[in-house]
Each structure stands twice: as structure tokens, then as C-alpha cells.
Length: 302
Figure 1 (cartoon, rainbow, N blue to C red):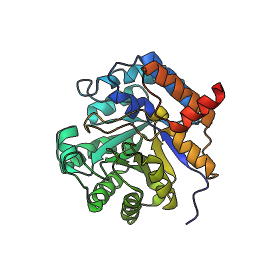
Figure 2 (tube, rainbow, N blue to C red):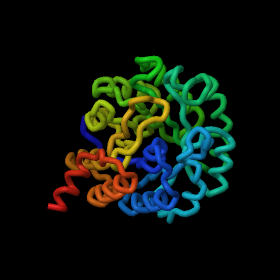
Figure 3 (tube, rainbow, N blue to C red):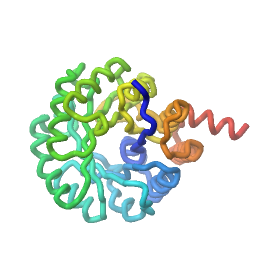
Figure 4 (cartoon, one colour):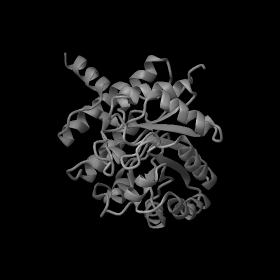
């Protein structure tokens, strides 16, 4: 199959990346991060989430972040929303796109959001309906598509079931997430083919964590299956508070280096993203996990 001519990167660093940081990141740093990412040409920057600060304290200032960012017309700024209360908070600050999330595995659903998969869908249906009625776009996340820290292997049928439920709710796009980063290229091909049996490929995005170093390989496998939307995180920020040992998201810099090397258009300035990755890693006092980013910065210094 011919590779896509263009690909869309959904930058999740400011939300999925920062939510697992041990130290509180000031709102001013988050605002600068979002603004720099959108200036680098990223078409989607997930800027925060409206979840209980008791569970995810790093996202407690999302309203302040949304109020402070300089919104660019070419960039969308989704927020993660778990329930109606979160939706109300997002609407209050002018959010125009939300993301809702479910798990393909029962164990992760119980540990992450304290309810069954079926209950999670029941909770989200009125949230999605209300958002859509107000002209808000809704994106759906399915987590633990390749494996679960509690249940082990996750059947493709479970991923397909939850994907179909989110599409039925009105989600315009599905992000299929390997939350603990255990998936391999062949496994991803099987998952894409399974979900694509009922969901058009142009409505499927892939979201990889790099725990076993398979993120970029899994992006390539997905490209070969006709997928052209990928979630990634600047400097490889991230992890998962409910999946012990899960390392960060696949780095935006590494994904861009692959895509550009394949001649696939993204509209994103890789050098600018590498610079942002170096800057945010310094601010967080953590190693820069983007291999392409580190190489670009080292070459520039030399």
C-alpha cells in the first residue's frame, strides 16, 4: 500500500505529557509550551484537561492555561473531559474540541476511572451528546489497546467494541492508545485492520507510548496500513499515573523525523519542535527523551 502523502500530528505533551510530572508545572510554563508548539505549525495541541484535581493535580490550572494561550486560527486546542462537570468547565473557557476516554480493558477501566467499560460508555453518552449539540467536536480515546497492566493481553475484539461505541456516540476521530507501550508492529497492523472493519481509516489515529522502544516502528506499521494521524509528545514527555512502568509518549521529534524522511508532509517545523523539546526538558529538569531532538540540538551546538 502507498504511504499517505500527508500526516497530522496531535501534540499531547501539554496534557498527556505533563499530567504525570512529579513537580507542579507553573501555568505560565504550560501557556508558553502550548504557544510555542502551535507557532511551530502543529495543527492540534491538547492543552489541558478538566478532571478532578484530586486525581490529576497537574491539570488543576487548565482553565488558567486556556485563558492565557494565544489561540491560532490554524491550530485546534482540545481538552480532555471525563464527565458533565468537566464539560461545563471546558465550555466556560471557550474550548471548541473535547476528548473523551474509555479503556479496551476492564481492569484498567476499574483502576483508572473506577467503573466498568459499560458504565464508562453510559457516563460519556450524555457528555458527547451535549457537546455535539453545542457545536463542540468530540474525539474519542481508547486506551490499553495492546495490553493492560492488570488484565494482560487485550483482545482486538474488545478494542473494536469500544471503538464502535465511541463512533456511535458521535466522535469524529478515534485515538487508539497503547497506554503501556507493549505493542509491536504486527500487533498494531492487526488492531488497525480489526477496527477498520467498521470505522473508516481516515477517522482512526494511533497513540503510542515508547516503553519498549517500539513507538516509531509502530507509527511506520500504521502508516503502511493507511493511518495518517498520530498522537505524540514533545521531548517524549509523559507516562501514565495508572500504569506503573509506562514511559513517555513517542516523541514528536522522532515521529516528525520519520515522516519527513519518508517524504510525508506535516506542515510542522522539526527544528523548532526540537528546540522546544530541549527547552521544556530543561524547565522540568528531566532528560530529553526525543532521540531525533537530541541529535538536532547536538548538531546545532557543534
